[in-house]
Image (cartoon, rainbow, N blue to C red):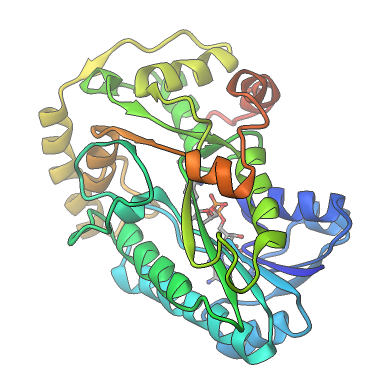
Length: 334
Ligand SMILES: NC(=O)c1ccc[n+]([C@@H]2O[C@H](COP(=O)([O-])OP(=O)(O)OC[C@H]3O[C@@H](n4cnc5c(N)ncnc54)[C@H](OP(=O)(O)O)[C@@H]3O)[C@@H](O)[C@H]2O)c1
């Protein structure tokens, strides 16, 4: 297939591009910045913006499928920026597929679309969207997912995949933050890190996108549906963090900080960061605290049944593959 991967230069997008290229597909990517790994894979890179409808239409022309990974992630910043990329950008992708007759669209969503600050324990895809989300990211990703699933039709088959906390070699988000904070002695476990959470190894999340592609057809059981993805092995935040620290050759973190205290700190840090117009994300946001203090684990039996998904790379194997990478995390940064 000729496949366009939006956000192909990103953490997950690169893994999707690599697996597609290895499987013999003709791969293009669309993102604003190039990535040398994509060039090495022979991926044609469209350096464009999903907010630009004409650019998206141009990149999708002649494609058999689109994998829409591009998104604005993060837990701070203007709501309008999340709206523009996650909602308007996704609308552009759907419109471009329809205009160009692209028959398949795999959309990368997130379990955050059903998170309202309360524990999510073993829920499946029948969990409804909440009336209120805790972050602009979650709200805009939910709007995007709903749009993609509503667009499923005889002309365009769509599916939404919801990987939870993607990690592995090349992770620019979760892993370097945890390692840097541990090395600087600033890492603490909110509420003892006792809530259970799912995570997913990057190659497993990418593999699910490839599994979904050929299954997409009008009336297929996966069309118009959303699927949670994880390692199928929920662990406490404490265990998950300490596994990564062990892979980095660092001692386990046992120091806890009460949820109420972190919440109070976030209520100060976040507005001060904004008022001083400091660069980057605040060290603490209310959204992050809500997230870290709630359980997030999911029933992935639908993905196993309908997509043939499994956590093909075990958590232990993923940690082994990630260990070398963690050693290279620089001492300074966000
Ligand atoms: N990482 C996780 O734990 C996680 C968990 C659940 C769901 N997800 C979802 O998985 C997807 C990929 O996440 P990720 O972790 O790989 O994020 P990432 O590393 O930040 O990659 C995001 C990608 O989107 C592209 N992008 C952002 N804004 C764009 C724009 N305006 N136009 C074109 N491209 C744009 C980025 O490229 P440029 O900046 O160069 O344009 C980059 O290629 C997202 O949809 C995210 O919501 C991630």
